[in-house]
Amino acid sequence: MIIIIGNQKGGAGKSTLTLLLANYLTQAKSCPVTVIDMDYQQSIIQKFDKAKILENEEPYEVIPANLESYPALRNLLGRNAKDIILIDLPGKLDDDGLIPVFTSADLVICPFAYDEFSFESTVLFTVVLRKINPKMPMVFVPNRVKANARYEIMLEVNEQLSKFGKITAVLPDRVDFQRVNTFLTPLNLSPVIIPVFEQIYADHLYGKHEITGRSDSGATGETNR
Image (cartoon, rainbow, N blue to C red; front, side, top):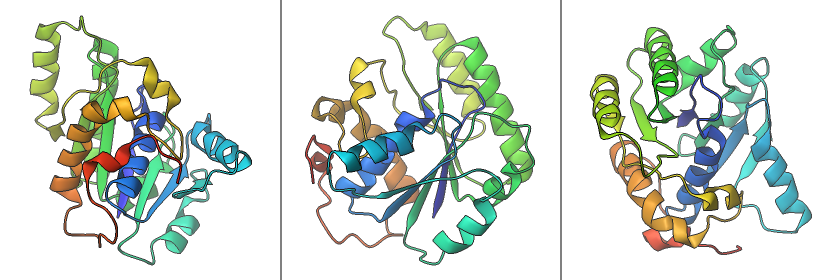
């Protein structure tokens, strides 16, 4: 299964959300995961390489890639239908190299913020995806939501985005999200991330992958494996 995490707007939290989801799927659900880092900043592969230097055991593989190399990489990684491939997309829409990525995806997860610019970028990203892959399920994750976010804006944005896909519970704006890396998620983030990922797992992944280890939600805690 191929899951792309993207939004046209930079700073939406794509890379952090990709890490959180990879940690959740491997630690809480024992799913085989591969992460493809296509973001220009390559922040995920940097964290992955740092973890290896510190001799932490890698719970999943992270592969740096670009749009040109994706078709060949897709053929190599797609041989096992039970594997989950998470793709951290570059923050742009003006490259034809995105078309093979969009057409091969089984699910898109789109983080966004409750502000006008983020909303417009999210809608544009969604419309382009819909034209290329009309039947692909879409999940919108309200990310870095501040405590003083205007309720009226939240209602309006949710109403519009719900026409395209499901909207999860919110992820609040917390400094601890900066501590997420490729081998742990801070334990105190579990109460806010579990409802988001449990919903995504139940709607799109449950029953499609063999669960060979623990499946308790508490396994997302801060542990070195």
